[in-house]
Image (cartoon, rainbow, N blue to C red; front, side, top):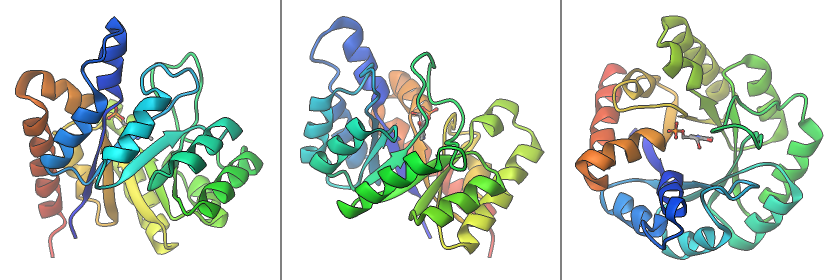
Length: 242
Ligand code: PXP
């Protein structure tokens, strides 16, 4: 089964916002990604609106023809926006104002009440919910208990350390999540090199890639950067064997 390649276009908005211009346009970027074969577009509406703006999200909803994945914190404000915009998927992520990017996974056990409320509201609105979590048993089991459709495993530590035991942690968590009936996605820090072993995990059905694909695009253009990631996923799939 192919792996869904979702491209996060937040960095395009970051570049635009750096100069207060109307370009580069994240919606145009999303369309280029889709034309190059991306299966979905991911955008994170942060509480501080440092990159994607509310209007971007609305325009993305109109333009994206594949799958729009809205990353957001589990707050009342974000849930209200999701209910209005109706992305195909909401990925709940932890958010701290001072962080450079999403650090760590959701504390599904500790934040259970808040997350439960957000999950229920999104599901009532017909939106699929994914939880961005660290690869540990407690969070996988808690995610399952919350009744979400998908988890996204945080690959940051694996990418940082490139240690076999970090890949093993991902493998164990993916296996457990799949056995519990959850779809398994992965993301954070993935490049067209380190994504290959991750794509080799048999239970993986989706990756979310932002920083590296936009970085590659600076040199080779966005369509080619997307196609390079697709080729890397194919190499990972080949590792799965029979
Ligand atoms: N998945 C989630 C839930 C994220 O928050 C991010 C970062 O916005 C990504 C994937 C993409 O990470 P990166 O930009 O390092 O590829």
